[in-house]
Length: 223
Image 1: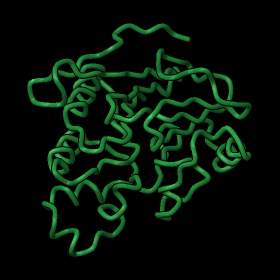
Image 2 (image 1 turned 30 degrees about the vertical axis):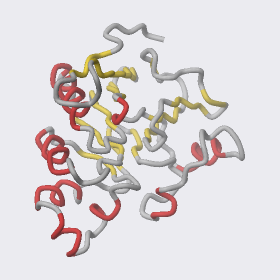
Image 3 (image 1 turned 90 degrees about the horizontal axis):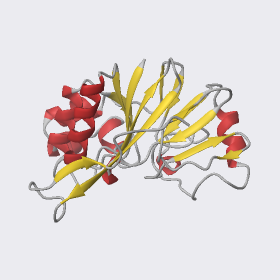
Image 4 (image 1 turned 90 degrees about the vertical axis):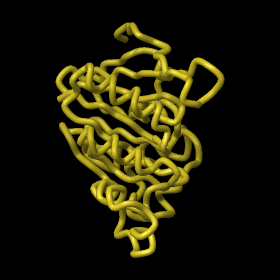
C-alpha cells in the first residue's frame, strides 16, 4: 500500500494543495494525516474540504483536540458543519498496513490532552527510545508533532534529516514526519518499505497567492 503522509498542517493550504497534487500524481492509495490540522480557524474550512476531498484518514493532534473528541455545542456552532464532519473522523491512533500512527510518541496517551502537548526534544535520553519501542508491537511507527524529520531505531537516532529516501528494512523504526507548515511531507510504500520525503519551499515574497510552492528535491537516491 502506498501512503501519503502529512503532519502538522496548521491550515497551510498552499503546501497542502502541493502535497495532495503530488499524491495524486504518484497514485497513493491513502492519505494519512498525523495530526495538527488546526491553527487559528481562519482557513480550517478550506483545509478540511481539501482533506475530505482526498478521502484522508488520520489522527488528531494537540491543536485539534477540541474539534475531534466530542466537540461541544459551542465549538460546533463556531465552525461550518463540514469542518466538524471531517475533524470528528480523526482518531487518537490508527493502524494501517501494519504500521502505527499517532501524533505523539506511542508511549503517550493521545486521549489525554497533557500527553498530547508533551514535547521535551528528540527522544535521545532518559530511556525514551526504549519507551517508544516498548509501547506498541508494530515494526514501524509514525508520528508528527516535532515539525522536523526524525528516524530512530531501538539503538539510537539515525543520521537522517529527510534529505533522501530510506528503506526501512530489517528491524523496527520510529519515524517523525516533518511539518507540512514548513513544506514537508512524505510517501511510504508498505510493500517495499521505502520512505520518500519531500521538502517544498516558497519562491517569491512570502506566502501570498502570487507565490508558488516548488519542490526542493525532485530526484532521490535510495539509502
